[in-house]
Image 1: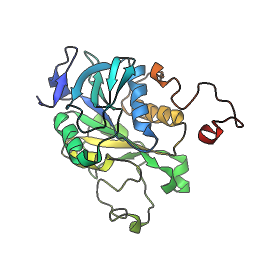
Image 2: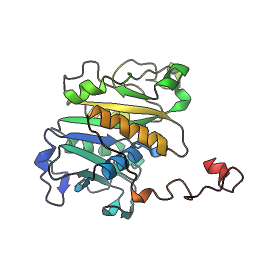
Image 3: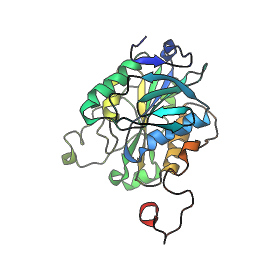
Image 4: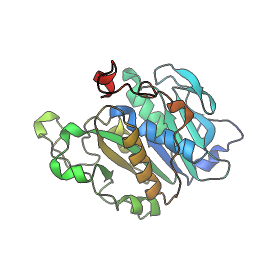
Length: 256
């Protein structure tokens, strides 16, 4: 049992062994976190553990559907299910990126499969990818595990980046360079010794509700879960006023 997992509500950390764990990478538009919010709300998951002490992320606390929520790493699940969702509501501290990734990898060591959710900068998307905004990232020889087999049915990630944009942008090694995806590459590297992969979505910043719904739906399909997505109450006013004043309103510059 990892000493970095602090259970609550009677959760047994031994349940991490063999479980499917969804990890949102803090990336463009916060789409992965919003997708995980949808999963927690739609599948009626509740907080079962804290990962670490919250010292690798910016301090944050607020009110949510499950009582007080924090900016640290919170694990959500049910008392019997084998699906666990990690939530991170605050950005990772720049000076603690390596420590943050190592914390997640240590806590999830032995999990059945880890799926990272990521968003990519659509400025680097080519015309062909407009028809496949959601793509899979898998190691060269993924294990024959049912969830990863389903993940492989998604279109594979294709990158057409200028190799001079980054020292690794033109590399074909795994994990690949990922524009706008935050710590996704480091997370995949840290999880490379266990069944893992990622679902990435090309997005632009704005009202990303639709992107979050699409990413969550893709994940549910990979997991063979049939559920109607339900937005949490905490999303009220997520991208400004509930009633948009229209193209001539003061908020048109931001939301229009």
